Amino acid sequence: MVQIYGHPFAAFTWKAAIALYERDVAFEFLMLDGDHPEHLAAVARLSPTGQFPVLVDGDRTVIESAAVIEYLDLHFGDAPPMVPADARAAIEARQMDSVFDDYVMGPVQRMVFAVLRAEGKRDPYIAAEVQATLDKSYAWLDRWFAGRTWAANETFGLAECAAAPALHYARWAFPIPAAHAALHAYRARVMARPSVARVIDEARPWRENFPLKDRGPAPD
Ligand SMILES: N[C@@H](CCC(=O)N[C@@H](CS)C(=O)NCC(=O)O)C(=O)O
Image 1 (cartoon, rainbow, N blue to C red):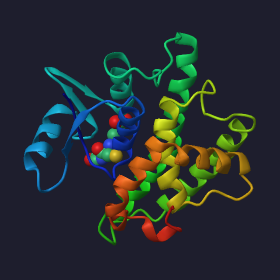
Image 2: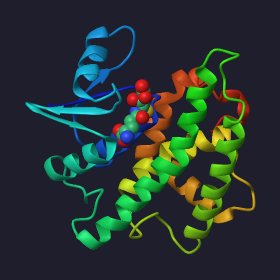
Image 3: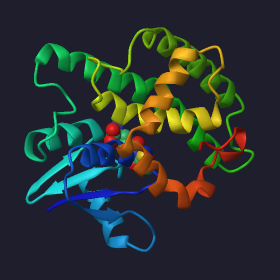
């Protein structure tokens, strides 16, 4: 059975988990926490900087959430692939995956790392810089979603695997302006998807651990 190293509260673990649930793939979840030092040691060895998720399938290891999802498309489950088989359509799916990873989740991660630093060693400019980046990302996404149901190819896929955690955590810490109605409607559609609702529920016990939890209202 395929194995996934991850943590239920971790954004990039969500990406892989959503694809696993969408494709109805049975898997062994290897928890990354202090109770499982052997899992932490494995991930430190398998990924360049200890980042996760990491997929292990026999003697094959796959790192990077998008690559994990494409591996699942190829080898597990019967559902339509998260990345379309058509190479032209796949471009839009990968494009929107990167938009959510790099311009929504990335800035939030930057802010998380900043607040985890010892007081007195924190960069005083980060919050404003992250807010400015997200202001631009939110505005761009609101325009992108005018007239669209899903982020790429009008099909739920890789981009939603990225959008779900990115919009969940970004909106919590940096609320999306009410005027961005198309983005709000898209976010609601994504969060209502059963695979996404499931990862949100599985992450609930760790909500108190979100270092930015007091910046905005907690999501439903
Ligand atoms: N580009 C990577 C990013 C993975 C990533 O940032 N994972 C987080 C967990 S959500 C992590 O490993 N954080 C621990 C760290 O950065 O040391 C991917 O898509 O898998």
